Amino acid sequence: MPTTTKKTNLNVKVDAELKQAADLAFKEMGMNTSVAVNMFLKRVVTDGAFPFTPRYDKATETAITNVREHKNLQSFDSVNALFQDLNDEG
Image (cartoon, rainbow, N blue to C red; front, side, top):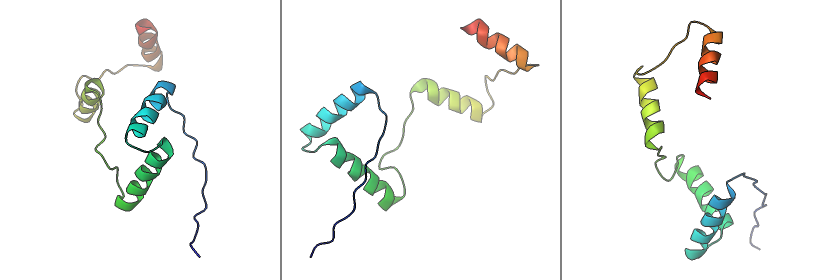
């Protein structure tokens, strides 16, 4: 007799347009989103890593580099000065 695996639900919040586009992309690949997510999770568990290299947009990548290299950082003399600067930008 074959062994059955107990299933559970995974609830994830995503942008509605992203989900709709992903559903369509997976359908064109011959699967549904549930199958695709299961494939992703199995690969992460098997490899112990993402099955792709995460990328950032250029602005985020630049900000990360600046922090790592201690460039273009702004400091404040007080918390009040920080909040004043934040309020001025808004």
